[in-house]
Length: 157
Image 1 (spheres, one colour):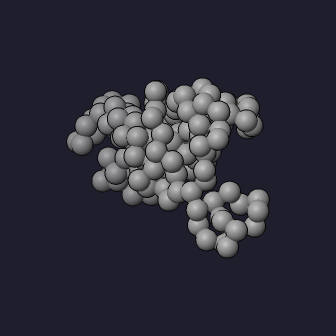
Image 2 (image 1 turned 90 degrees about the vertical axis):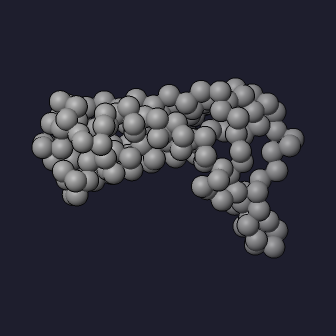
């Protein structure tokens, strides 16, 4: 169990002690998508959704989600985010919306979970805003694309 950083020597859940880690710039980028019907995508494209502008609301929700990551994910450290950038683009090939999130901080722990939470909350918001048009939407491929900073350095998918 020594390789599991959130488990102590007795097998109990434990928050990782980052007090001895160096303060460094940290960055993470994640992505996901919401696949939907042509009808739902047309509503987005023409900004005809009754609940409002889908991308703007979902981008704001993603930012809010990133800021609340430590209250949603057990043992996640509260991180003072210096940047959260969410972009939602129409992808006609899906058909649907492609979501990307970038998170940044300067601290002792990374911001991968914040980027992934931002994606998840953005995608769930898209679903919520369009479910009256398409209940069969699929949220998928939520994944980390890259991270940098800290002892482990840069990683790219």
